[in-house]
Image (tube, rainbow, N blue to C red; front, side, top):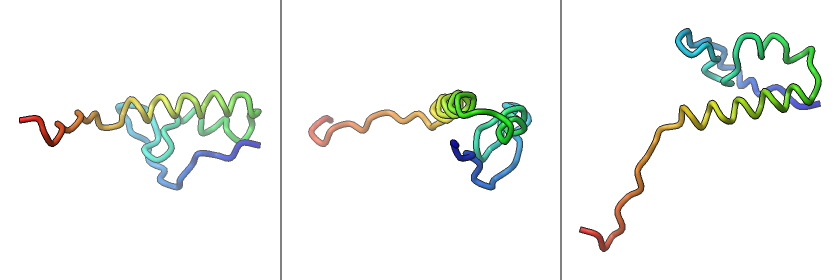
Length: 67
């Protein structure tokens, strides 16, 4: 059984419709305890994509020799 991605920071972000703690939708949170591992794996894959999309974009630092 795949464990829940919940980290006990349960607050829904209205604009995105996602929990700010686990990046799941309310529908994904509701169905989690009743679904199979295949569906859970799909939800986890969606969470990974969402986290990457919301991660701060950083530009590489210039090398020490570049000026």
